[in-house]
Length: 435
Image (cartoon, rainbow, N blue to C red):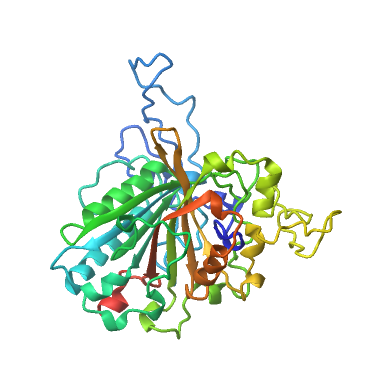
């Protein structure tokens, strides 16, 4: 879990300016009016049912304590159309779903194009806070857009199935094997990949269910994973999120304001293949955290494994969270204070020939086994212009001696080509499928 590019590109919580924007806010609705999701953005839904009581008996719906304005948690809206797809540089959301599809036997380029057209139309509507284009289930009826983003990508096998093998990018060649891998092939790879993020769990599920239904007879779900992060507003001020090990996770992530951000994350306009201009490559890994073992370590040993203080994310060499790590500083015993195998040291770009990636992960928890061991960890999602210069060199170095390796296990993996954003009137992937 490379420290240099961990978590979201921007702070998890929206800025005051973003909170004030209230994207898509509409006028107040009177008691008797039909209320669409979009028209409801100005007020909180006062009709939600809270089913449950201390004794377990339910006789009525508990009403909210008071009606409050719908804040940016529900009203913030990400844009579907643009140079890049949504869900890459947008602030990290509280809920996420990752899902891969395989095209069914007999489905080819024509069926794939129709599917991407349907998915794009649905994504545009849902991200605007509108109902699904067909047979809406009303799951998200009372909510605003809630910062929903939907991101679409192509796996290695997609190109052979659609007769577009010559258009497959070299950067999409399968990832090399790593000694720490314990991969479940059934939960890896896939022809098509979808990332869904939102700040409301019902909005996220609604999008997942809509896209699954819109796949129709063209594609079937190969695997699906659910994730979460801290909710906006859960901390007194915007701050870097924490992972399930309790570590601040994301301090050295590249930022859009960095001069070399686009070069590291996105395929240039004159890049190859042409249909990937403005796109990015995403590596997805299900990384299980061996929390029982990790939590037995004293805090000082946990901090030595990472190379940063657990309390505030500051490097062990001193300073605050964003202070540059001093790799040469030694303690009274003459040893470097940031151990040579510390995770944060190994993953630094200047220790990897400048290799960097934008990480935008979700935590996950899939229950406990019969012995009470948690199946929990990180849905690692990282973005780069070229995985051979981003993820691969860093992971190879981690494979050779990361102090964190005994406490994690890579259980699933995928690499996908995510094309640039769709212009008005286009669908995602149109330049590939109709080029």
